[in-house]
Length: 189
Length: 230
Image (cartoon, rainbow over all chains, first blue to last red; front, side, top):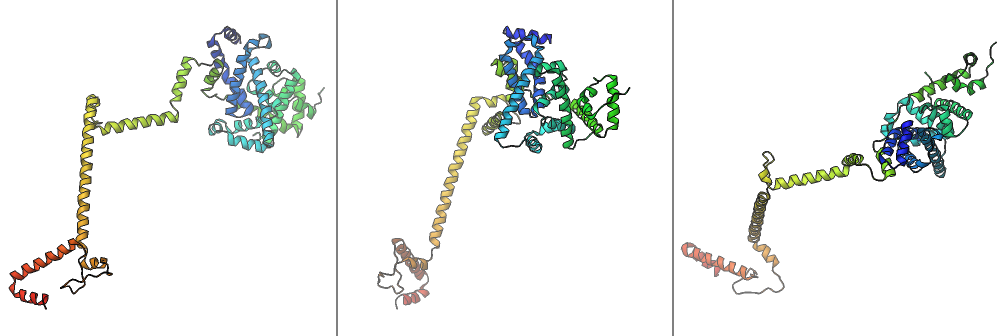
């Protein structure tokens, strides 16, 4: 965290290598958040690039009072993901595509590349598929807590909601995810 | 005193239970309720299973070119080291591979055509003067062969046309003579009429040969004369 703050300072002083280091340190984490949220590698790539572009342009507005640089960056990522969700939801409505689960699942499974299918194990693939069916509020809470292992206070900063709401969303998200998996035929052994 | 616990409480505190955030009294009441409730038992089991699935999700590796793309989008020019690797990756593109293979094939063809020995390659064979002389020799040989081939073809066609001309029968020739203006000549009873000077010459030639034969075989001369002059 301390190192991130130093790198940000160096970036603001015009040291190009400091920005390169920040990109290397955070690309994987941001890409994973985007991928788990969208379930699509291409969209995740584009969104990751957008996140860094926005962070680079607004780097001067970063204050350590917001929390760590990683939390601030996650907050930027979350905002972009929500924007992306709203935009793509409008597109889906325009295309007269129903939000019904089987249709969305089929569309995604067709669009997914073979290497992605191989990448996901059976249960992991089903969990990822179920994740994309969660509402964005519950999805982001579950991803930040259970996949990114963020503390409640960090999630509270990222989502800018009270701690009780964070806990409630995580709890509802997990239960809803379990219900979706049951509908998909995934049951505990 | 045992704490009372409801299904609503189970659902509301499920994450706290799974994360180990319940105190001892809550923990006991939660367990007691879940173990006796037909609704809550499968709920807790399925959420616990889901949580296991979430924790089992592995980190996904971003594509290797993503960092370069981010740096290009933010800094504009990419640092030289990254640029070099990007350039190396660009060599793997199908367009470049096809182009390189085409160029290599062309070079091989040209060297083979100029007589380059692939089994015993020598640097001297690649000297421009050597390549020129060999290419010049090959061109001349090819030209001579093609000229000879054309000449041979011409001779063959000429012979063939003469043979066709010789095989053409007199009866066929008669058919070609127009019947509208038969020109009667003295001494001709078969209505044949040599239409061209060449045919006339041929007829004269045959007459001369008959006369020579008649001189050499006097026995036949009388009969021949008798036949010719009834």
